[in-house]
Length: 118
Figure (cartoon, rainbow, N blue to C red):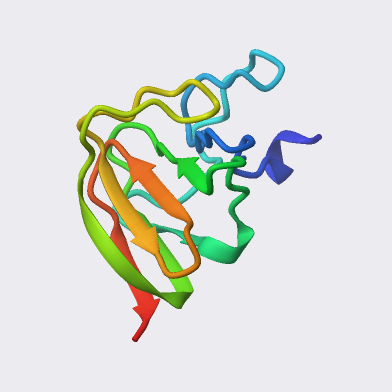
């Protein structure tokens, strides 16, 4: 893929967004001009994320990247996770969580701006 067409990636149910940092995809870092503008939230859509068999997704955007999560379903609970390991083997203890109607739970090291249906 040409460097001027590099996209951000979400990998499986333990998602990591790679924006200007080293990537496990091909072991290459992204060019400084790739990714999202600094200071603007990177917008994710709940329906586009791929939960594991327990309905969980772990997202991380790297240092200084703000996330905005949009959902067509209501947010039912949020807070900080008790000790828990996802089906994919990710320890989410102490991460922020967002549980949506229908059972999908998003975990993130940093707080996320959530825009959800009422």
